[in-house]
Length: 172
Image 1 (cartoon, rainbow, N blue to C red):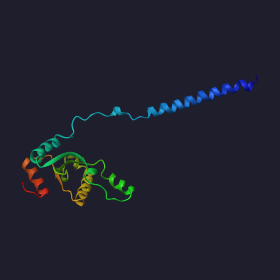
Image 2 (cartoon, rainbow, N blue to C red; image 1 turned 90 degrees about the horizontal axis):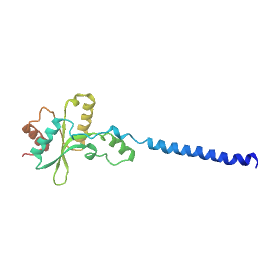
Image 3 (cartoon, rainbow, N blue to C red; image 1 turned 180 degrees about the vertical axis):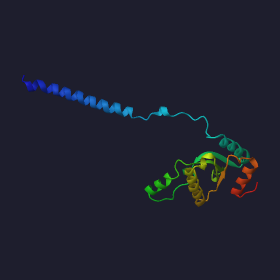
Image 4 (tube, rainbow, N blue to C red; image 1 turned 90 degrees about the vertical axis):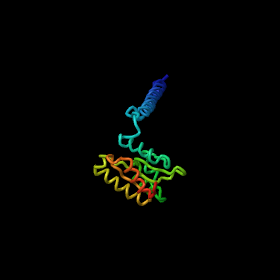
């Protein structure tokens, strides 16, 4: 046997080993690119504040017989962009994604939203929240969906009842 005949199988074995190592690295890297889910934990409560929970109980007591009271409703479930190009719809939808209404009153017959209720706590003193609120207020006006802003300090049952009735233009 000459030298080339002896080296050829050895070179083929080396290429096979190096290729196997390369494939192993690719497979190993893919499994290590999984997102780290250990950074998440279950929230103990649906509501972020005691005021939200207290308002929810008041809304159920006052209006639970006539309306469904849904907390934390994403605005994209209430409002949608008009039909246009896919890109434009996506752009307009992204302006309302990740924004949610604190509460929505819906009729019990067809689950049609009747009133949005926002509880404006201290975080609404920040300019970014005020800009967000102005945007949402203009948007709800354009789509003819009433919105009511309440302050945590004004959750007296009679006051809440009267303010909601004014927005709904109904007498109970």
